[in-house]
Image 1 (cartoon, rainbow, N blue to C red):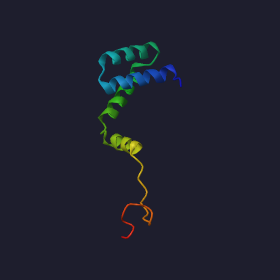
Image 2 (image 1 turned 60 degrees about the horizontal axis):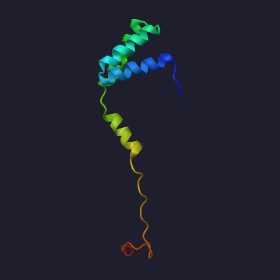
Image 3 (image 1 turned 180 degrees about the vertical axis):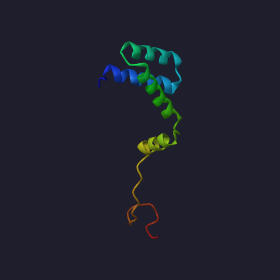
Image 4 (image 1 turned 90 degrees about the vertical axis):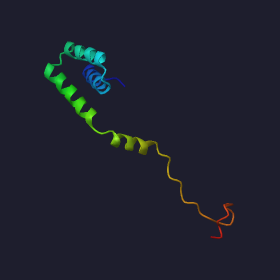
Length: 89
């Protein structure tokens, strides 16, 4: 998968903001300016990334847990040959 230059820069700025990586942010903002993004656009990208960073991560953690949760086991059906010892219950 390849990303266009603008999308790549937006992603770099967002990641730098999320990680508080000032050197990476400085580099990404410089690259954005060199690619023709206006100061207003760059500030909007940073503001959006900061807003997202402020959101609670509990929803993300919950969704991640759902993705990787073991599937529920089907109910065990007792019969004379199952060997669990509970087929008389």
